[in-house]
Length: 240
Image 1 (cartoon, rainbow, N blue to C red):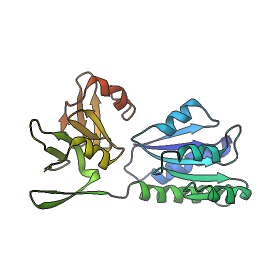
Image 2: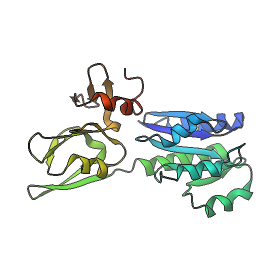
Image 3: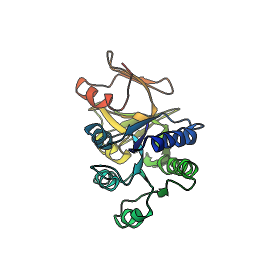
Image 4: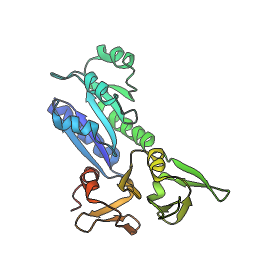
């Protein structure tokens, strides 16, 4: 899932942002949603701190009570992966943005080919966010290279110190603790059970009544405990 979070208090430019996002993502096989905010709120804060989803922020620098720079600083407190794009009608903020070391993808003037440049920036952001990562590991003296995007879930085998990596088309063994794998693989890999971590990018559906997680390739697992359901619902919407 990709969240495109827009922080903009001008209705005209809010719509321009939405148009650019939809054009940029029109031909991409990516599930995305646009979250619109015209002022700071608890819902915006929840979106900032939500884990396990990729994010692109389109932020107007000059806002009301809480400026775009303040929002970007809040994002960067513990999130250095999400993409931030600043938009403004005033070039005077240019130096403030880059001196703040907020790792901004671009700073766009709203009156110079704004929509087209924003669309290009979003396409560039997708290349950064979805650059294919590869998990490299060794088992029985053989080195394996498995793209992160191919992994569905990983389960710990009972009684022995070994895990099974279930991919879209195969399965592999690895002698590593499941907690270690969760940390190494990153935010999209979520623990659903003490013996299972799931790649949320490859989840097709979760039936919370039966605790069955189904993946894009049709495989499934029932390794979902009741205490993990609340966390998982934050990642997969409308699955009940």
